[in-house]
Image (tube, rainbow, N blue to C red; front, side, top):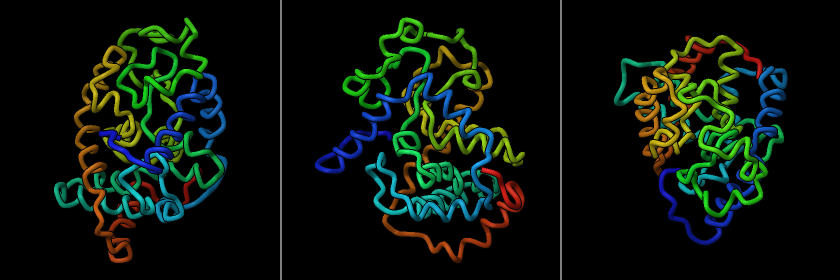
Length: 259
C-alpha cells in the first residue's frame, strides 16, 4: 500500500484488517506460522492451478482492487512483458507474486496473509502503515527485548535473518525454495519483499540490511512499479495469455508442487 486515501466502508475494512494484523503479528505468532507452513505438506497442485485459484479471492487490505487477484496477476505479468521482453523470469514473477494468498483459501485469516509486511522482534517503525493507531495491543510493543531499534538482531545482519510479519510473500518464497524452482535470486527477493513497503518505499530498516539486500533493493523497487501501476479497469484475456505463461511455469516451476 503506497498511499492511504480511503473513505467509507473501504476505509473501515482496510483499517480493520491492519488492526488485527498489528495486534496479532508478533515474534511468537510468526515463528508458529513458519513451523506450520514451511514444510509444504498441506496440498499438491501446479503453479497455474494456484494462480487461477485466486479468482476466488478479493484482498481485504487493498483499496485499489475490487476484482479477483488472478486478473491482477496477468495484468502485472503483461506490464513487465511489455517493458522487459527479454526477462521471462521477471514476467513469471509478475504472474505468481501473489500466489501465496492461497493461504486465505485454506483457512488463514486475511490479516495473516495480505497487506504490507514489517519486521517483528525489533521496534515497530513509524513508516509502518497505521503505526500510531494499531499496535497498542501487540504484546511485543512493550517488551524490552523486542521494542528497541535492533531488538533481537545485530546491526546489518541481513534481511535473511530478520523475521517479517507472516503473509503471502514469505509463504510463496518458501514454497519456491522447497520445490527447488529455478527463478533467479533477484526474482525470489521480489516475491519475498514486495509487500515490505517500509523498506523498499520508505527507506526504513536499512540498519538491518547487509550488502546483498542493498543489491537486491533496486530489483524489488523495479518490480513494485509494475505491481502498483498495472491495476487498471481493463481486464486481460487470460485464456489467450495462458499458454505463454504456462511455458514459463514449465521452465521455472514445472509439474506438481508441494504447498
